[in-house]
Length: 318
View 1 (cartoon, one colour):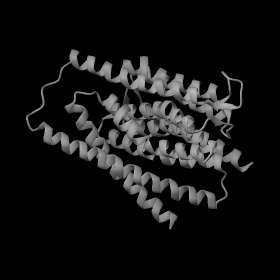
View 2 (tube, rainbow, N blue to C red; view 1 turned 30 degrees about the vertical axis):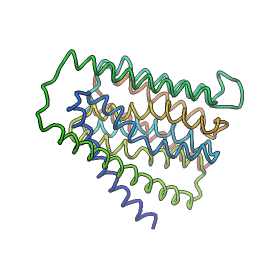
View 3 (tube, rainbow, N blue to C red; view 1 turned 120 degrees about the horizontal axis):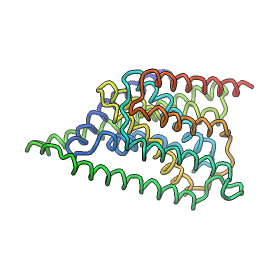
View 4 (cartoon, rainbow, N blue to C red; view 1 turned 45 degrees about the vertical axis):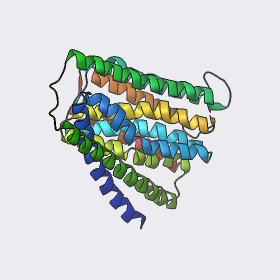
């Protein structure tokens, strides 16, 4: 039965993603918001709700491996897996603002999360306390504010033609399509994760491995589906915003909220996992310096993701 649910959920995820991307892109055009910002905030945050739910539930239940491993694994999958696949389908456009602000912030948050995980600041057994979480939440709110502020200034410098009088009705349809797509996406994702975990548990796989692989990749299915759908529509700026926005949301908001539920302590996530998360963010910045991620670079990212998972499977079998 779990295998049937898995297949149906996958179809729902793909269908929901297509409607989410189409609707959000239309909203972006009508409000004169850039595709990157709409991807980072509406699509990126929206598709990260499964990670939020899973990590918060892990914190409520005291399962730190799930709460933290889900974030680390999702961020690795978002960059190496999702952007790798997206770039293979169509080279991903990157602008200079992404290189100066968004990508460095993603790297900085990855490093900060790693330092907190290994008690660099406190020297105690707490990985992430409530004060640390509040700082992360403040960083996230500031990022959202600055992103909209920069986008507003850009739209004033480069104004676009006014929308036709029929825009409000079309906007309503686009909004409904966006939220319906997001709802189907998240529902399908939840069923996918539940069935995948049931199958893995039946195979005798441990919790830490499940959290950083199956749960992390499963909760990132909305990002994968949304990015692939965006690439198919040649809207790669939205795809990039989706991944970068999701990673920033995961590190700053999800870890911030989870730490308010309960201070996070000892985890089965290793230094290798954190190191791969940081390396993936750095690799993304390096590849983005030419203002695009080519198909060759996408292949390198995807190969790196496969190699990382082979390593995880090997260590799991020891």
